[in-house]
Length: 471
Image (cartoon, rainbow, N blue to C red; front, side, top):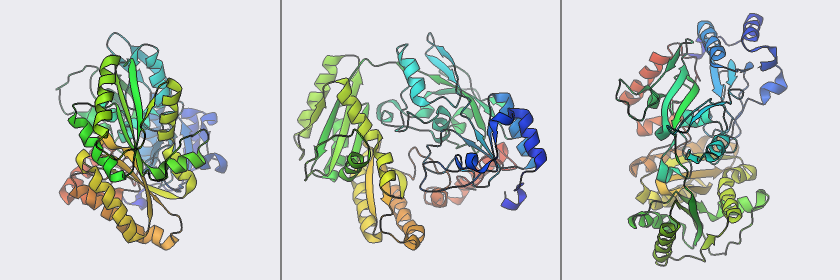
């Protein structure tokens, strides 16, 4: 849809209608309030909506979508605003629909290991409620303490535990969705096996709010693992650290977390995040954070010993084995704070690259080579166990001209390298606004056309999250 086909300025009548749906208290039109919703965690981008609506239930969302569709008003859905691809930015103005009031855990079905939740539930809050009942929902993005379940669904989020347990899509059984015309549908069934028709549930997960608005989700759950072991391994070569990743899997061991952290990232965390304490030797280039979990302590100790023996073949520093919960929490806080630390240090662009696990050393080497060619500093960390490397490119002393122009050529080269190595341009952050110009690297024109035709079927007037992915 062309921009001029949208209704670009809301009228007093539009505002009055929305007041009848969500009430005046849950409708924001003043500048200060709008500015709270004009950005997410993506770089330093800001796009002001014309109005913010806080819906409380599915029926309200249905009425909002129906009206926006009839009036051709752009409608962007927002969760917690922790996204890194600009997926929740209202780049066409219009209505920003916040899901913050849709924050109820509707049911935890202990007998069937299922839970039904609304999209505004904070991921960590959900996990902690399940833990009280001995249940486990594994997806755990770095921002799990603030991000919403709805945003995890929109981006198909992963996190450290994805290496063993999979990503968000692997736990979704059924979704309640409001379509662009206000229709309300369920996409699947609350069962573990379903070969009935097309899989609309999996189509919706990862669609970044462009196909419909998720208002409820039914998840399958697992029993909560009772034991875990965590070790921090320093390497004198970052490439060697990447090579060790595949070797660990050759032992027949699947860690519940296998994270790569470059020294620069840890240095930023120590400088900018309170409470981060870690001594790093001068010649250390990177660390692996390795977690094992299960229910048999003896088995976990045996696996840890096997990993210790293996790492004897690498040029490692002294391995730290966390021996209590407080120490484990500190190490995970260190890992989860890296993105925040980089953001505090400099304006940056974060690329969410992913390749086959064994190709991680070549990806890291390529990123550094491209950085030298285009004169940018990169700080890398990520989920090494599944080949997902977050490449943070710092603006530093780069001119605005190079940052906004020449740098795109370097990013394109990084993504082309990912493609050459059998990977792709996003592992868990999505395409959103900032990566859509690179979609031609991984998809042919025909493949993109097929995706656009699906969008057209769900949202013929193009009102849902316009300007994202391939629009």
